[in-house]
Length: 445
Ligand code: SF4
Image 1 (cartoon, rainbow, N blue to C red):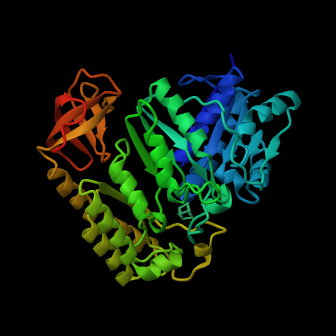
Image 2: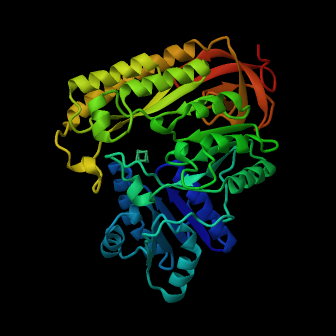
């Protein structure tokens, strides 16, 4: 039986697309190559959001040349965001003639036909479409094992943040129909998944062009009603589209977890304006405070870009101040790197790399201190935890997450997928330790 290997870069949307690619290949009789086995087809599902990711993809593509020497019939496919960028497909084919297939983001489901054509004609296939579509419903998928499944609810983004390449490679916002999403979630629950993560570049814009009048809060309500589902999460939220109705939906719907990932990117109004984020520092802080007011136990996490063009000492100080004032549960921090084709790439005021590095270290130190303090406050409290399986670091204990997305390690005989009540007994920056004090969710007061 022919074998495949899929190497995925970037975000969860790409992880989800790779599950579809695996499903299509499995449907054509391929099986996943074992560790150390030379596969018959390698698919690189690529990312170009950050310079580092792009470099890695190109390095890996180059490296795969060696596979063709030991296994000349092997097929190499480069698909996804990087390939969708103008001129990249032609450049790959010119510089790396060992690549057989290049597909963009709008037609990854064509991988099966592309493979057939390459195998029959031994001629490269390049299909990078400008036309934005919603992929056909019902495509097969080989889901990553576990208790959690990813469900894409919308594609693309209309926001054009000045540093971001996504709207150019993923196109404008297109939403799936709520009925199709609900049916997929029901199928996943019937297959044994307990938690779903609803995915989109900006899930709060869900439904805008559907013409049904339904928004993301309405979609959450639909998904919450799926029989047998334990938990719903969603990402990513854009602060400017996060409505009060959304806050109420997260607060009121039993399966929707109290964790909101809300990228702020900067605490400086002038930087936010140049980033074209569509909100001010004050509006963001007001939103965070309304979320906390409605749900005092809701965890808030964020993304921060350090060293955006024109970020001066004052602007950076405003970001540090915002991080301290909000007290995020966690922050994912990134050094700004220009992406060709975006507006920010030609903005003046480049911040030296050394300054960026010094600033990111400061932000990380501040956030780590906050995270540790917030985690320390959890000691002694009891949380509902969804058992995920043995901990990767210490398989003698189980790992699971609270509704607030905190990872906890504990001993239990309860199988993966069970909900247990866990009392936190020790805390660190990244994980908590605990003891099981009961089955299911802790009683509410
Ligand atoms: S919201 Fe901004 S950062 Fe997020 S995908 Fe859209 S353009 Fe990119």
